[in-house]
Each structure stands twice: as structure tokens, then as C-alpha cells.
Image 1 (cartoon, helix red, strand yellow):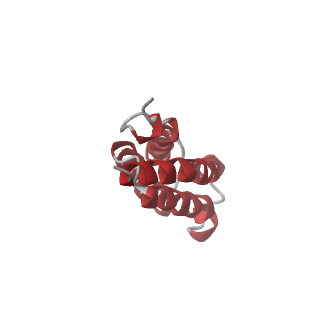
Image 2 (tube, rainbow, N blue to C red; image 1 turned 90 degrees about the vertical axis):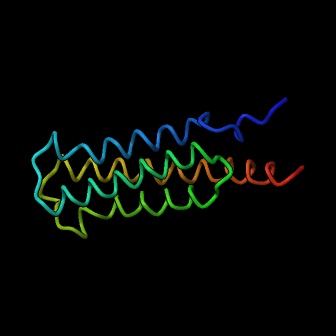
Length: 122
């Protein structure tokens, strides 16, 4: 039986990370925000979504899951670092998306590691 975790475009973790990144990047369109918050969310969201797509295309790329964890952590702390905790909707969006991205990246790491090991075996 084929290892489905090694097949491109099939891992739900990475699809969820892509969607979370898109939500983060687009959320300044839906909520009141300031310039620092908007740019932070757009850039981090786009990077999370892009890394999710890369992880989908290359399921054995372990560094993609590590990048998701780092980007999720950055999104989580960004309301405090960039000073937009006063904009509750965007701050909560950053905290929720950031936290979920960290959890999903951590959950996908062993799956990516197994796919990487399987790809190395001929």
C-alpha cells in the first residue's frame, strides 16, 4: 500500500496551513486595523500560505514544517511586538491563526519526517 503522506497535494495539515495563511493575509480587508498590523498580517499570512503550498507540493520537505512553526509563532507574538493589541479583531486573528499554525506545523512534522525517510529508501 502506498504511503499517502508522501503523495503531493494530499496532506490535510498543509491544506489547513494554506487556508490559515490566506485568512491571516486577507483579514485586514475585513477588520479595522492600522498600517503596521495590516502589513504584518499580509506578509506573515502570505508566507504561511506559500509555505503550506510548498509543503503540499513537496511532502518530504521537513524544513517546511519547521518554517510553519516559526511563522506561526511570529504571527502569535506580532500583536504585542507590532503594537496592535488595541485592534481586538486583528489581534485575536493573529493569536488564533498563529497558535493553530504552530500546532499544525508541530503535528505535520512527524508526518513530513516519515515521508522524507520513505523518499530516501529505494
